[in-house]
Image (tube, rainbow, N blue to C red):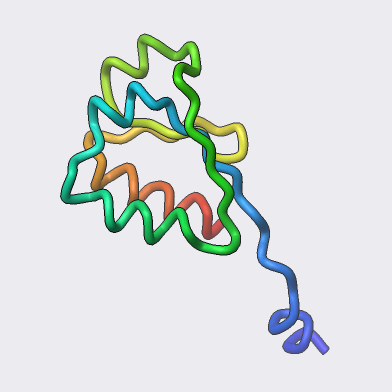
Length: 89
């Protein structure tokens, strides 16, 4: 029975929020395709905000808010890795 539950269980939907200014500053052109592929998954909804009022963090590094939890990284490649890990949880 546990196997059937695993096979047919609904995958949790994650909500990801981005600051448009932060993306403009830190998202590298060569990462766009990977980000688009990741964000097009069925279990992910995302939204870009013009500003999230996290100016101090926004100036320092790329970040996103996943289900209310802030995820920051050194660069956009690392941010994508962290987002993928967070969504798996």
